[in-house]
Image (cartoon, rainbow, N blue to C red; front, side):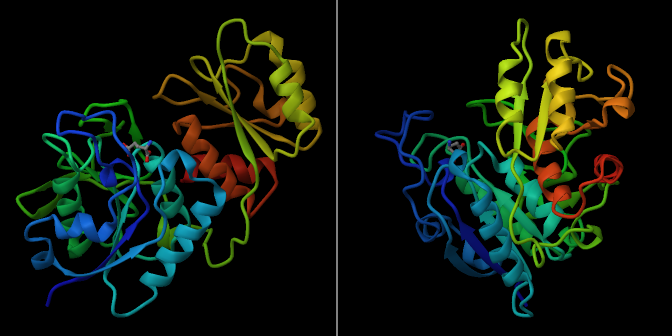
Length: 329
Ligand code: GLU
């Protein structure tokens, strides 16, 4: 029997259309419906029993906390049904790594959830969306994909939502996982070679079933000559936490230390991350985190550290438990 898969459309370049086939990077985003995409995909309906739902139709840079919550609730409701085996989410690539990581942390199901996008619009020469979508349906239909957490399929690769990051504005090989993809999808078959060691989905301590709202977590990006005023403004706002995308190993300029310490005294959590894009921010190395009550992001990039921090803050406000989340997920 074919697997029963729902494709949930949210927009993005995968649903984009350009003025001509030569337009690979300038186009109208989020115009094709998920049914349009499916109808244009030869053989897709042979892969699985497919249903579709158009949840949003927008570029993923427009995703806020309400979209994250709405999508997670929708996916969770689908996966609770006995007549659905897996879900594919079509999504803009700009924040696909954030959304996928959110689902990975809060949707407690072993059924496959595959988030897929494209770097070129559907109308472009060598559009990557059709094969990416075809491959996503393959992965969502495969029993081998169960229990592996939320997956991102792109350019023949299957990535874990925990590790994957968008690394290019235009190249088809835009997605990278520090430790490599989990596997490949080639010739209609999902092939897995490794697993992620960190907790997710059914082993996560959080669930969209009980999350009503998400806290506000902001990111500050470090640079030479940075001025403290941005931190001082944030300390007077209603943010619950600041992820500081520091230089190198989460280094913090002298200029900022005092304002970050004061922000923490106002019960705003501080997460030290790194703007380098890879590597570990080590607790109590570049800064005395224990003394300041700060948190080190381990190996998570700043925009995904923000997702983990939002989710973790729904369950605890203690620095110790929040730090534990960064070495557990
Ligand atoms: N900015 C759009 C988005 O994230 C287009 C980028 C893309 O999908 O590749 O939805």
